[in-house]
Length: 513
Ligand SMILES: [Zn+2]
Image (cartoon, rainbow, N blue to C red; front, side, top):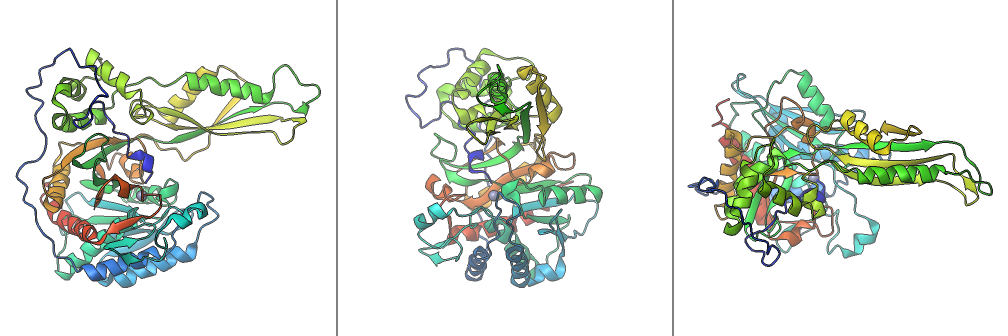
């Protein structure tokens, strides 16, 4: 997962934040119907897990350096093959009973498990997690209290790269499946487990390919798809101290354009009126000035419908206006919400397709005028902003025929929106409360980054994709372990992750479709 993808939900005016929002809302909106959306009456349960053995397995998993480097030639096939073998020996019943395929294009190192259900008329469900991890930069190595690839078990934690992101989910899913198989259980609906090889670099080899495969196999609709996102954490929603479980219901897209000026080079002693670098720089400046307009995404409306009633009362008219707003009209309160969100670069990203100039190249020598200059601009599109729309926008902004524009990414569109009022969402919320209790807020949210499930959720067959990492963290400090130093997981909380997947297998049985 991308860490930045979590802190996207900063709203304005949280219960616990004082002084930042002196401007009180003057207009009042009737908010009688703005009642709590939190699910009442769920009883907490305890799932019996053979924890010592499970912890040994997750600890060992860390020792396989299944790293995704930006340089895709730097790929450790042995690490992946070794890890696959390790999974096979760790979960014998899974590998005896459930069909496993090793897939991926051009490199096949991702895993697709098909656990045949008893009733072929029921829609299948899919659990996604990724096997790859981000590298540990040499500069940060000495900040690790334990070796990042040894899987040390100490002070009640398992330490190492991947124990939060995302091997804990791979293993929790497989532990739960192994437990179920030991009981002789078989799901009613077919369950797929997909474990990707390259989530940390966009998932084009693994997740995207497997989404293609499943589409070609004729699956019309998944009843439920689950993938990582934010872990359950007190304070994960900035300003709210309460323990919060955020469920991603939509993800932005991804596209990178190369913007180039190809002209003539020359000697720097006799420069032309305009240099290639100057022309490109001007084009980029014009593009940055032509920001995409702000709008409130439906997923943001859902988010505030669920979170709003739990936040500060004086601001509820504002949240109600966002929650109940219509896409074709903009009220003063919604405008006020947008104005506040736009002051912060994180929350601003929820409001429009972002433009990020990420690379700029030209020139090799001080006395040579380069014949070309190129820039790469990365966009994170809102729904509707297709590559065609974005390229048109860029052309119009730059207004210079000398500049060429080229899509250099395996671009992905913004995804569908999962319905937070669906039975599938309710199954997820219920399971969260059964495992972690009722002393937390559960709310949908709009993911401005995105994880591998975007390759599924962008398609017609998987709108009902819900993203959350099923692990409880103690505080936001622990969250820094994602892609950072001292990634570690509490052993006791890992037990609950396993319990979560065990229980959601049960709860999915209640879905009608
Ligand atoms: Zn991840």
